[in-house]
Image (tube, rainbow, N blue to C red):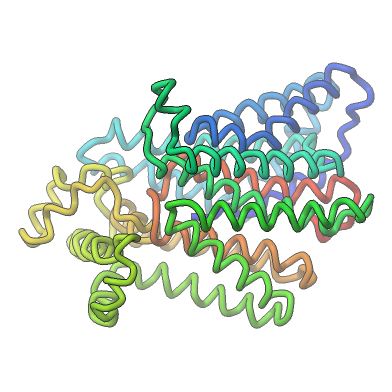
Length: 427
């Protein structure tokens, strides 16, 4: 799942005067530091992105209150909430909440709903305040902290996680870095773009952008994350194509997005019938055969309840849901994997046709809002959209808070260039 831009209200909120209050300036500075520190925070604790985003939202909100701009911020938030894109997202959240009434584990589903809704809410709050400004020093800080996080991960992987083993910290396998690696990849897109297009000290900013790109790509390739490797390939390819053929690339991505979401209930059967056995052998490290088997199992669950789904959050233990009785015995066992390793399939399983339709509408609205941008501004945003959707289509659970939080952060970084006074296209 990808997050739509939050720029319409944020651009109006760009007039906040932090110079009128020392406390407001300090709150805003704290929020900016937190936003830049997210890659390192995710290295230290690989689910920490929602907490970091929430603390940043609190800091920026504090800046608005200290500056006396609460009334204006409330008006901006109301205008943002009435936008068609926000209404569609709110409709999906409402439908997901309603679907808990036919879920077999509503309490757990509600917790997962909160994991989705909170980072989205934090992102809207930050956009509403207008206090997050991607100044040249701040974008350099993001790039440097991203490089630091990648270096720390590479060092730990190279040493066999000796430091974590010695300290007895969490899981001591290299896959614990999959989430922070994806965080570095996602945040590299706005970091590289903002540095490359910076109007100040380009002699330093562009080399730093190039270094951040090399380091982000390097840690992705060095990591265990197959989803991150796919995301890197898609990001680079779409970014380049959008620079050369912006409208054609936008249309192709829109068509691919629609096809992937619409065909999600059948993707298991499609891939099972067209992929040759040799390909499964070549991609065994990415568990390609296992993924297809999982998609086949969850596809049968979708076929059993295509309109309403099985209830939000139900995929975490679908083998105990009544719908499991309608899945063929050979496929039933894989319903216990926790999620279908595909966000489009999970959307269909849990929220049915209604939920899939709402997210389809949100995604197309997002792409429509990108259409007026110049090729230089469209390329990184469209590349990140395509990469994020590709990773979500083969990887982690759709509603994980860290994932929603890093998408919100990347969206906000792109929008923060507008408030740095660098032209309307940065919004």
